[in-house]
Amino acid sequence: MTKGQSEPPFPILSADLQIAFYFRLNSIRQQYLAEALRDTVEHVEIRRLDSELRKFAPAAGLKKLAAHGLRGELVFPVPVLLKASPSLLGYYRLLFGLSQKEFYSKGPFGRFKRLEELGELAPKTEPQIESLCESLCATAGQLLDAIDDVSHSIIHDLQLLTIGPQLRGSENTRIGDAAVAEMYELILNIVGKHARERTPRLIRIENAAGRTVLIEFTSDPDVRVTEMNGDRSRQILSMEIKGGRDFSNIHNRLGEAEKSHLKAKQLGCNELWTV
Image (cartoon, rainbow, N blue to C red):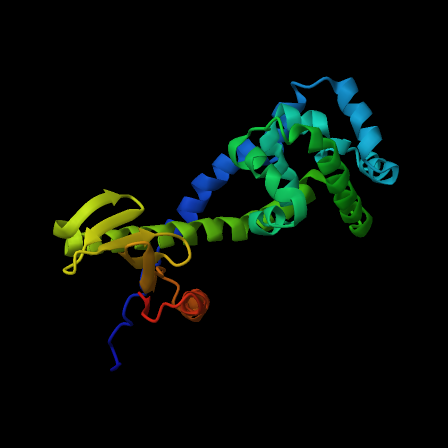
């Protein structure tokens, strides 16, 4: 730069991701955070709530909360709350620092996923709510034993620490889904005139040899192409679709694709693409 020249202007960075997080966080507040718990407590019988807290929560934990002017349900889940508002399971999961993948893939907890996601308690899982609360109250007791101070703001901050990666993961999933949808349109433009059947997850075509070829859009791999020959099938292509704007994470995405390819190769597929 010569003397007298001004520096070029700095680029304007995008705030789109954080804007999306803002609106998603507002939705989460009504489902899983303090507002959701407060609304539920207003509609349950307080004597029953107190009785269940004495039954399920450790006395030392309740005493510690009371010393800070806090009620037990802020940390300890009990059946009356989860039955009144099943989605509150997400409130406690976030508080305990458990991602959805980590929590719902561990042991028996997967059967309770619909509580958080759909706000529904299935008849077959309702008898197991007490066992769930016993387990989670023990986890809550560990948390309270380990922290020196507890307050509304600390509870909220701990939940936000869990929400951050969850929101980032949801955004990455959305980007990935958009990439697969774009690939679907590209493939359809190529083979569309040969299509005999088409759904959002499947394109069935007939090749030059008169054999049926299935182009399936699944999760692992993202695209699987299989040729049918009578009762026999042959997987001829496995395709992993990776979308994203974060260049620093590209090696992680390629590693995930490689794991899928290794699985496809074990099934006899030799054509392995990453897009």
